[in-house]
Image 1 (spheres, rainbow, N blue to C red):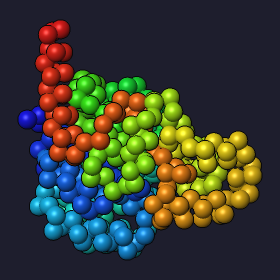
Image 2 (image 1 turned 120 degrees about the vertical axis):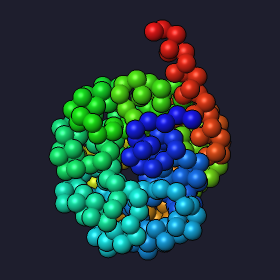
Image 3 (image 1 turned 90 degrees about the vertical axis):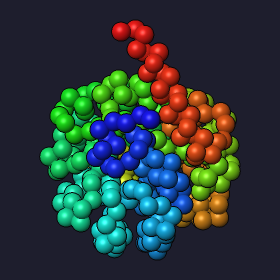
Image 4 (image 1 turned 90 degrees about the horizontal axis):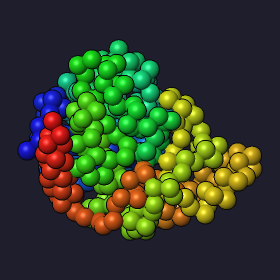
Length: 321
C-alpha cells in the first residue's frame, strides 16, 4: 500500500483524490472512490441546490470513510455552502477562486480544507488562508485550467508552501504519472478524466466513448465558453474550460462576437442539452490524458491498476539510484 503524508492529513488509505467535477458527480460515485481507499468528492458547479443537498445527505449512507464537498467561490451557492457546513464533512475543498473567510468557516466545523490553484501566487495565498492541502492543477487537466503545465507548476508550489501537502492535478492517468508527481514533491494526485471513463461515472456513454477516441491534441481550451458563460472562468483565478472539440464549440469559437451577443440563448441551449442527457453535443470536458485512456474500467479496477503501476514505476526508478 502506498502511503504519504496526504493520507494522514485527510484520513485516507491511498493518496488518490477523485476530482469533484460538477458535470460528472454524484454521492454514489464519490462513495465508490472513498470505499476504495481514496478521497471521493462531490462537485457543486452548475448544479441545483436541491441536487447538492441530496448528495450530501445520500453519501452518509453509502460510505463510512472520508469524502470532500467542493465549492467554487466565483459562483458560490450560499445555501449549499451552509448545508455543507452543517453536514460537517471531513474535507471541504475550493477551486477557481480565493475562498477567503470560508476557510475559517470550514475549519470551525472541523473540516480539513483543500484549495486548488493554477499559479504559485495563488498557492501562496492559499497557504496564507490556512489551507491544509493545496492542489496544483496544470493546464493538461480537464475542466477549468490555467496556463502553467503540471510538470512546471508542482515543484514550484512544493517549494513555495513549505510543509503543506501538495497534490498534483492534470496529465495523470496511470501509475507512471503518480510516480512522477511524487518525484516532483507532491504527496498525492487529483484525477478526473480517467474516472470519467469508468463504468460507474454518472455521465452518458457518448462522453466516455469520446474520451476513448480522443487524442491529446483534440483537447482545446474554449475561450468562447467564457464569452457564453463568463463565470467562473473570467472571475476568480481567470481560467478557461478545457474540453474535447465539438462541432458546436468549433462553430461558435469562430464567431466569438456573435456568441457574446447571443450569450443567454446559447447557455440555455447548452443547459437544455445537458438536462436531456445530450451535454456531449456541446461540451466534452476532458484533460489531455484522453490520448492515453483506451478502455472503460470499474473504479475498483482503476484504483487497483493505479496503485500497482505506481509501485512498479517507483521500483524501476530506484534502480537509477
